[in-house]
Every structure is written in structure tokens, then in C-alpha cells.
Length: 258
Image 1 (cartoon, rainbow, N blue to C red):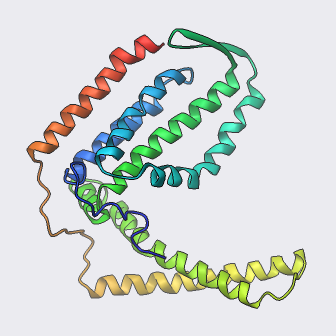
Image 2 (cartoon, rainbow, N blue to C red; image 1 turned 90 degrees about the horizontal axis):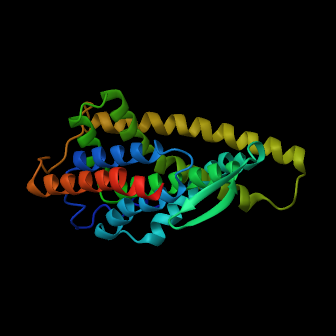
């Protein structure tokens, strides 16, 4: 398990990477809120909101293949919710797409809107994480006044998730090496339960070791970085461009497309 898998592109050098983490976090949060707040019938407008995340990914030199792969990894959870919509709302609706209008049921429209909002917000989140070192992100959240306990939990999650995945992989490899035949559903269930119990015990011990190691290195609940966080001219320019884009989408594109 490579420890830099989640944010392996955050150590690059680009215009977006050099921005202050607080500016990027606030921008992504506001942009996400705007996307989520769009009505369920605004499918055509959502296509225009893809501009923001794509611009961050391109300027941040993040491969689009990597970004969409991450979206696909978590898509099964949202697919269950989205694909259930057509079954309980089958009323017909006329949807404009620029000069073109087409008929679609409310259920399928809601399904497409849910998926579109999911893709847009996930791409924005991936752009944030992929262009910001996690330590800088935690430091920025700390500077923004986010509750200390939440910042500490995020820090522990980031450090512990790799150990947890490693232990899962070791258990599965050991199981595969010892599995000589099919034991049947009942015995396989017992073996799986025993594996989960072993994983739980190992994860508790690993969590204690991580906590002791962090305390031994002087961790006092505050995340520090070598570089001082300071709002610069580039951050102000980025914020102005982002605000201009949001105003343009909300007050110009949205009325025209609907």
C-alpha cells in the first residue's frame, strides 16, 4: 500500500498547488453548496457547472483518468440511491436543453441530476485533495477555526487508514494462501467472522501504537507546517476569479439555460 496514493499529486508544483489551503477549501465548499442547492429539474445547468472542477484539475496538472477513477470507486453508493428514483416517480416532464426539448420521466430526471451533482462535487473534492498536502489542509482547517477534535480525528484517519488497509490485505493474502478448497457457505461465513474479529483486535492495537508514536514525537493536538500560511496576491486573484465564475453561472447561465 503506497502511503501517497490518496494525495500523490499534492506534491507537484502548479498555480493551484501554490494557493493557500484556506482559499481552496472555502471556494470548494461554496461551489459545492451552489451545486447541491440547484433544483432537481436543472440538469442542463449542471453541465455548465463542470467548468469549475475541470479548470482546477487541468491547471493543477491532475490526470483526468485518475480523477474519474476515484469517482468510480465511490460511485456504487450513490448509484443505489439514484437508480431507485425512476421506480417511484414516473410522471412525464419536458426538459429544455438549449434550443432542444425532450421528454423524460421525473424519476429518470432526478436520477441524472443526482449523478451529475455527485460527479461535479466529487471532482471538486478530488481537485482540492490532489492539489493540497494533507498536512497543509489540516493546518488550514485549524486556522479557519474548525473544532480541534474534528481536525485531530481527520489527522488520525489519514495516518491510520494506510495501516488498516495493509492489515486487511495481509489477512486476505493469508486466507488465500491457506484456502485449498471450498468450505461451503456456512463454514466460509464462520471463517469470515473470525477474520473480522482478528482485524478488529489488530486495528485497536494499531490505533494505540499510532497514538503512542504521535505523542512520543511531541504531538499536542496542533498541526504545524514548515511553510507559514499567508494570503498572497495569487490567492486574492484566484478568489476573485472563482467568485466571478459563480456569479456568471448563477445569474447569467442559469436563467438562460432554464
